[in-house]
Length: 223
Image (cartoon, rainbow, N blue to C red):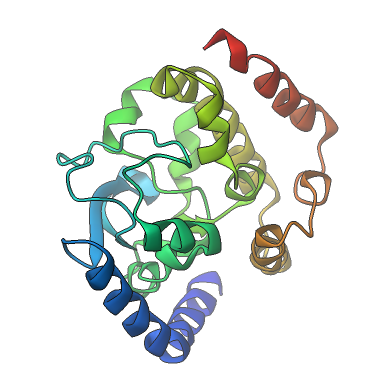
């Protein structure tokens, strides 16, 4: 049922947003040199490697090797158009095609970078039981992640030691509680989060898990 929903909604998404995608593509080309799309290797269900699509929001000189360098929200590498795309999440629109191909779902853990798999324990790898997604409880809670990264000097270390393990726990929370209507709510909540109309307490109904988020924010100065 979930796969059928994903396919139908992704098809409708492409049908309804193709004029927007054309405008975005033109804006990207006019704003900076380089391709319209950003492509990168990621992991999805059963740790299968695939190529994720996004509208390019950064200068082509940044992260040439596609390693997935952690970025701050005010990085000079982000283009003028890219800042708008990231804020509105329009850069994610090409992932409709990832959903149509079966590599992604609307709701699920964000696709992981292959190089970060070495930091996962066997227990944490349980999140690869499901397809990766465009959004999830972890994505909503960390919708301001790029701006959080502005507060630390060693962004990669902070991400690996603090943010990534917590995101994994949020993804495990999602898998334990996944259901069709929960997925619908996460879709709606993702849109509401863009305009700051939903709190984390409405996303994660686990107070202990939310307290860990507060602890994570408190150790920022150590990095």
